[in-house]
Length: 240
Ligand code: IPE
Ligand code: IPE
Ligand code: MG
Image 1 (cartoon, rainbow, N blue to C red):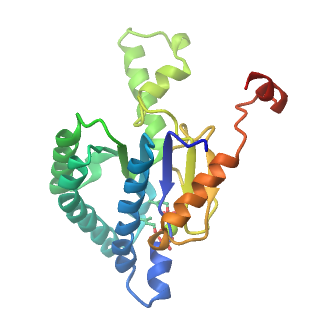
Image 2 (cartoon, rainbow, N blue to C red):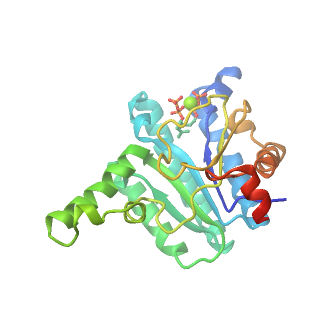
């Protein structure tokens, strides 16, 4: 079965999961940690090279203060609790997003766990916090503009590879498979550039309910797709 090298997931539906149980939204976010562990384990076991998880978008700052602070608290406590095990499992952890907007303790914990796991050779795990796809592209464009202004680069020499190299996922293959739980069929400003040719899989399962069967269903969907990258089906048949 053809397997993706890189899986990207929009973990959505925590709030609705909590509401169904008459619990506060924060309880839904807490219940979302289990599936995060599960997906990391599944990817590691199956030899999937990279996993990128959308935990908090640049737009999520607009949520009520109470929800934002409970999420930030959860990120910090989960990170402190899990990092040793991730490290022992050879996971290389990185955070993508506008780190400068986060609290000092969270930034410190993120930086510490990144450097601890930097040399690991197992799963490349990216957690997107305070991340927006448009912000990512703007940041990359700004770096190129600065090089042009400094006379190190000519605008006409800018190509796709150069812009890619300034993005948060630089150095990783683009996600082959995009998964979104929670029933919405949208990108919500996730990896706009890198998802150009990803296979898109949507499930109604709410994130806290996402399980091995759900993950396997997404992999089976991926395996059933014919990825043409602009070519014709006949061209593909000839080259295989
Ligand atoms: C996803 O679940 C988690 C974050 C966006 C932080 P939601 O909190 O968006 O859950 P729903 O969509 O309200 O059910
Ligand atoms: C997307 O979910 C962001 C994350 C899962 C972190 P949202 O719940 O914020 O998306 P919208 O607002 O419904 O598009
Ligand atoms: Mg949502």
